Image (tube, rainbow, N blue to C red; front, side, top):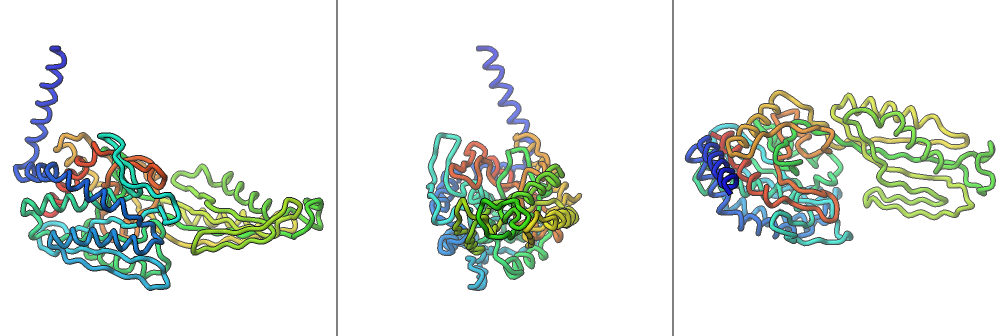
Length: 428
């Protein structure tokens, strides 16, 4: 019993000591966050219960409308940035407030999820006191709500009046639209800022991202001779398109898979007598028989890298592998750029130091930069060359991009508090 009382007393003393590191104003911000958490969770539930797969343009805009009303209530000037109809993307939500105090901030979120309309739908559901599930609950509707909840706490204490803040929620982070106009306005807004904070999923309460890998795509096509399967491997017939695709993919793995921060994933493969691949829908239809050598195969995949130099070196090696065709086959590979890499910089590390100090002042413990290899690409990479950046400031949870994606509800208010104080300290 004495040990228990001692532990409680020690915990109370520790919390009190940490609270003394916050100013009176900062303690009010924390109190506002805590008071608003029921309303904050209701907002999260509302947006999670709207399907907003990237290609569900109506759903993405509906989620955007919910957030737009919240920003309007904060006094931000909001606008919807449309995309060309041919791009088949919903567009982006921008909320701005201009001021003269502190750093000019760009707060980054996205409205879309990977869960398209033809996939099973999961509503927001509390599993217990510490966990909830739902589509996009941590990637990244939870992060979007962190931004709003942090700003609401600042607004409640009259601390937004002269801050310069742009919140930018893209509508196609998960499947970016083709063409420079997809991110032209986003980049333009970033070039007006000094600091970019992105609220993609937090690996955990104690890790942020000072670097992120870029991502690009590749498409491999292989060709062989259509013939009876009894003749396969013979010089006049050769190996067929599927064996050639298998050779290339395995050579990619053997040659490149051990390089730090480099990954490449064949996400879709179709091969047979007749192959129809719809790139826009990422779907394939194929006809084939076991006794016919496949004359065609198509493979699509991604390539992730930390720097542009690493990307180009990998592409060179992949092209060389493709040229070494099996008998009576041929192959071709094409690459398409996507997200650039977000390289680690001194400015990014300074922002990580701010997150660390803020977390310690709140009594939450230390924060450190995470391994870039543990994350994929993100919208922040488009602007990393223009401003100091920090990512991974959103909610924590598990299973992003999969059925059963969860949010850690115990850490949710802590992450909102940290975000609110970081924004406050940057805009003083």
